[in-house]
Length: 127
Image: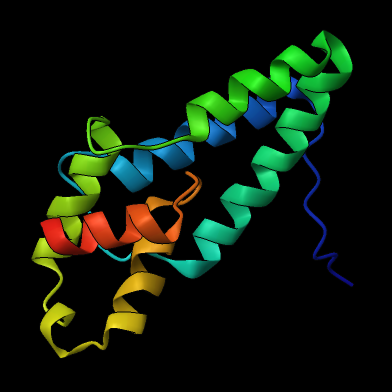
């Protein structure tokens, strides 16, 4: 029988995996365009970050949570925002989607960053 469990609990392994996902999602010249807005990868990345943040808070205290919250606050000046904009502009189905579908795409595309309705609207208008 093959187990479907995959456990990563070492801080540095979690950090390396987080960095690899960031690179895959927000690289300037992607090989696989489906990676950036994949809802599965977005969900996995958020779970990974929850574990990573939990470990850091246990080691460093609540200041680690504040630091991560600051880092996860994306805005139009961030490199990842601009990479995301280019991906959305290159999405061939963008014009066919409803506004709700576009917002869902934006949330997955910009994950793991925190995107509220106001930021989603700004992004939508910039596309």
